Image (cartoon, rainbow, N blue to C red; front, side, top):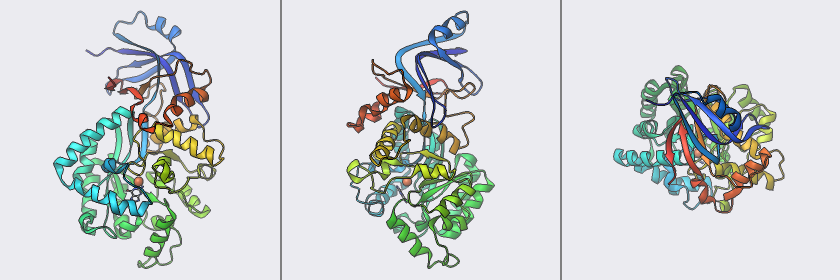
Length: 436
Ligand code: GUN
Ligand code: FE
């Protein structure tokens, strides 16, 4: 029989907002079993919590004092079928897609290859503490089902739709794309994301029809928007010749006309947006997944796309969250993403890109994009006990932002090590990964 209570002794970092994160040194995280798994009951100082529960019978105490816990991560934009192209040569987005990404995604046609890869990637996600997010699969139906079957956590997944401007070996007919989305949205409902890859590869009538299916079945919608200037020129040139779209002025308006925008839509990137476009995104309550490691300069293993203006997005009241964009981004760990967000903005002299904000945007804000923030994303009472434990420097600061910096910036010059920062990962209070 599982214990009714679990108490984990550790430092606690509990994000609250862009500006605030609760920090308890030598704390205790109390979990209580429920029918749907362990939930957070309370957090506090070890010295106060332990005596309070001393008389309880069904209790397990885990002494991990010296380690630090924080909620597990949401990665709101990543391509699980791009695990092998993360470190391939990157010059710019369109060349990288054509030369590396698409040939790799084609391999997933093979069902046993997809199954093996999904199991491996599920292990990677658990090992970096990512237990939720919005994920792109390939055009092949089973790559979405495999991800939903093997990834531990709360993910929405979608098959990219590629009906035009795509290589022969990776092109669907319009009919095939719509039929696939109909089947998947009816089967997976709010776990599925209708995923036109981006406007250039998906006929507008396919976007429109499949977006309607998303609304009918309560599914999400995700796609790419304004990631690079080349891409914008390409998409506007292309759509200026498509019937009904000749007069559409902006990339965002293409999606608006195709009825893709809305409160359950997540746009990847959104780097180059006019005020009118930002207004449209705000009015439709569309959110943005910002992918700093993918957008970073080529020297930093990104695609060199540019820097997202988070201040402007916030000024327009657009909800945004952080994401890895694997394989555009080189590492699966959200610690690497947070570090890159802080460092790139610092370098550009943009104020306000703190570690506190980075943590909030990798946890609660991600949960919010997926409409899960009432039950996920932080260590509030009543939320699911989804969290990670990390090793902590002995001289950990008492100041929250400084402590976060000590933990997160630690591997900034050996980025590969970010993928092995997490010591233990818990989903609904049960350990699903432990480093040996
Ligand atoms: N735009 C269209 N497809 C992709 C993709 O796979 N990755 C990135 N980063 N951008 C895209
Ligand atoms: Fe992407």
